[in-house]
Length: 444
Image (cartoon, rainbow, N blue to C red; front, side, top):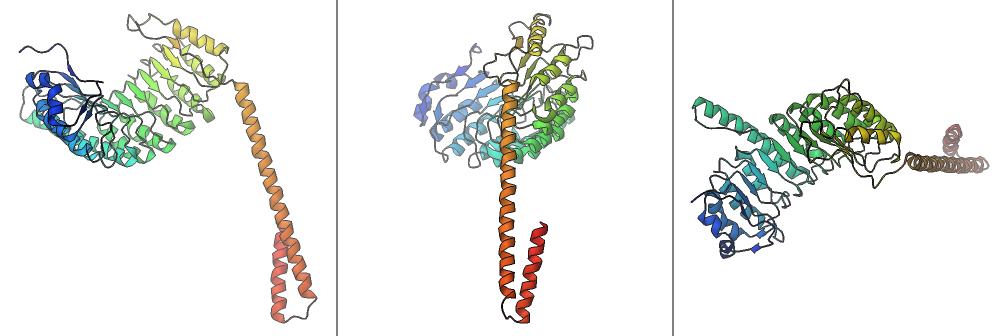
């Protein structure tokens, strides 16, 4: 039988495959043909018995290079997922050509992540891993990252074994793509992820958007991990928290990525306290000449930040960013009519067609501005906030002073009453203590 010209796909059909019979009725082609290179079961819900039936069919696909298992457990109980996932992933381990797997939109929290961790430790051919919206959390995320570190060791061992045995045609590909967004990885798992990235220095694409990573985690991820990936081409860390602290770590990392084509750091508070200045200073070193796309939306960047970026982009003679063609700036705090914004748009749009055909079909210029906030509006809001804070502090001080005055008056009154009585030496001693307290209060 000839190799099929199309992949096997049940994608998006919304099938509910509970039993072996359910799975059998939709997979006749999969059982009769053993030469598919891509399979997609995404967008259906699979029960454990159905996965048990599918397992030998998958393991027979020796030409398989990629599989899409995203969103295959909708409406399933947490207790159903581990055995179903074990059947599917175990069947994929013998497939030495399988380099790409997408497991997005499945619940892999602490109770369900074990089969995935076991697979990741062992599948040496893995080259591209996509895990978006899996609800991992920092603890399960740490387990996944640790498994990838183990995978790096297994890959190294396999290469040594192949070299020692002169195994003809054996190629152990490096891990090149890691997409793990919307997984609540948070700062707590970043040490494990940094170690994993350090062990996979040939990574080209890393996307970890919307993971609740704070400044210390960003610094750990960049300095201890991604700085060791000199072949990086795409980095997307949008919707995490950088501020000027993360911007400093990013500025130290950028010169180490000469092949970087896309950088996404939008919605990261990058415009605060000189963060944009640090980014532009790093780009001005001219070590990111391949950079095409820069995503900076919702970063509180003002017109001064745009001016700094424009200065780097306009340095045509030095060629600091000669290939930059697309900058996304919506949601920042400058006027759309700002001269620097207009000049930046003209420069980028003027580069259309400058890349010997590479730019065909790609967007040039700036994104659409639908949610800008002008400098003056922000400044007024900040001034109002400062006034409120200042007034609150003054009121708090006044209340403290009043409270202290009341306490002092009470102490004096008590002391005077004690003096008018015929009291013992012990009581006189207590009055002395009160007097000392009164003196201290007045000094305050």
